[in-house]
Amino acid sequence: MALQLLEDVGAEARTALEAEAERLTGWLAGLRISPRFPSPLSKEPVSGQ
Image (cartoon, rainbow, N blue to C red):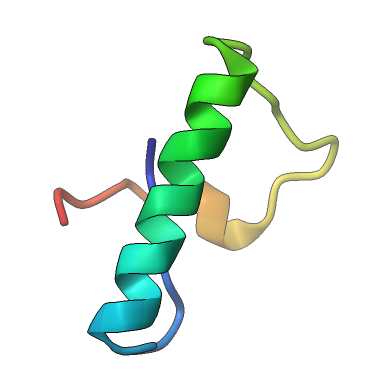
């Protein structure tokens, strides 16, 4: 799972977003979804946050 926020949303919102990302990752059960037209942001390397 990679979660990259474009702005600071605060600790509480970040925790909620991370929990939802984990839930969706589990729900997808390893299925990987690729957008048809990737955004420039998706082409950037993922940093270890």
